[in-house]
Image 1 (tube, rainbow, N blue to C red):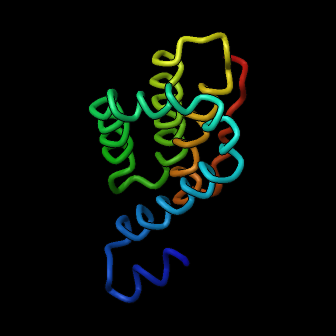
Image 2 (image 1 turned 180 degrees about the vertical axis):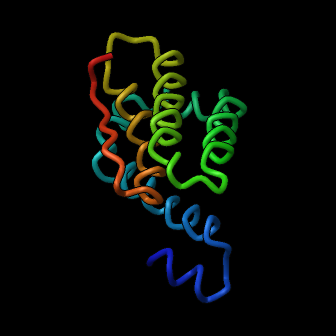
Length: 127
């Protein structure tokens, strides 16, 4: 599954193709490297997704506004997106555990890396 296939086949716009592939990349993270963190914090993470939907939509909206026609803005937009996700989960899951903040950051970063693989954004648990 790759972006070029969806974009060239006419089944999607280029941005739509990136978004489609990103969904699978994010699920690959959630069910792979992020799975243990999700399972250990499932109640809080699930509650955050449900109760902060508006905030997550704003994170995405800001990301898309920043990258609209400006591929050079991708790394900065991705940093802002991952920080936005990190903040929402860290604030909602106000435990001493830093893995929830890392999970949120990494989930947002995964979308950015799909479209802008040259970006070097990393997520740590040092919040």
